[in-house]
Length: 485
Image (cartoon, rainbow, N blue to C red):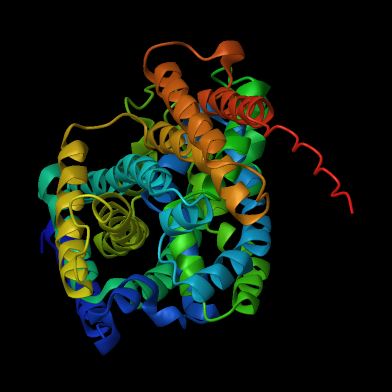
């Protein structure tokens, strides 16, 4: 049998299996808005652990992270640095968000912001920023699936068709089952991607170098610049540190993270997840090994696109059988599809509830809202698919760009949770100035000192909030005159 046909057969079997699980997960509660969005607010530790894991470990993990290690070397460890801060976010914010959602019926980040500041326009602004950041993130997953199919099948399934297959499967079970479908498919896909990542990372270094330690010893002898900062491409400490900050604080602001907080059955569940969450980060360790393994392999003929290093190592260098390649493709697709499902689900809900709900859909019934949300899943996924066909640049850079935009919600979210004295005019001005400044620095200007543009925009955002708070202080009330007897 042709090797490519074996790979295609294994992968299509996997896709059918995931689709079956996702559709079977549809329950009666999926027909209600709260059931479709938050799973009825009774998601337990195990499912929530894998759902939140899928928020982070995506096509970026199997393609972007190894590519970053191959291209830059040591600076790739910024990924592990910022992931170490995620459990703090879950512990500190999660129970508070979950309690507010249960108490006041919140389903989105915009719900909380609009209600706290008594400003529907502020909720709409948060929704617009959320959708603008989520669509590039979803594009990463679809583009990653297309790259995986094209490389693993030796072109038998082209980029456009591979991306389309993944898009159709994810959109179908999210359309029908909502959060229930996402939860059960993420459980299966999470276990699969962890097992395959460790198998590939250890077996590739063993086959090519005799082990992970020997691999790093050879890199140290021949190309030591990849093992020290600022790395092979001169990434300075400023960019490294600010990338960690943007990713850590921006990660706390993602609308899909908030929605999973709302779905938890209790704050205690979220704190349990935060304790075990670092275990999921081990997925990235073997994938970074693969990137480092490619440094010496492709030293003479560097790859045109660093994101393909894992595929090239598995397909052309390590000489795995087509059965292993098929499983590798399925595991990598699991990463892309599990995150893509979360993103498509969240983007549609944010668009309908936070942006369209207060405007063109004002007064719509719950049934109509659920129906429009389902179709928005398909519409936004299609937009992301079309962006993916434009062949975007580095997946890591695309992801960092999305983080730089979403982090501009930080002051208004922290104000809603912990700083009630912040006023709506202050946080709205800060978010607008920060978002515009970030887009200008990212696409038109160069970022000062080589830092991540999101940090400069965030500093400007906070500065505007502080200045607006100070300038807008209410005048001291005049003393009440004493009444004479």
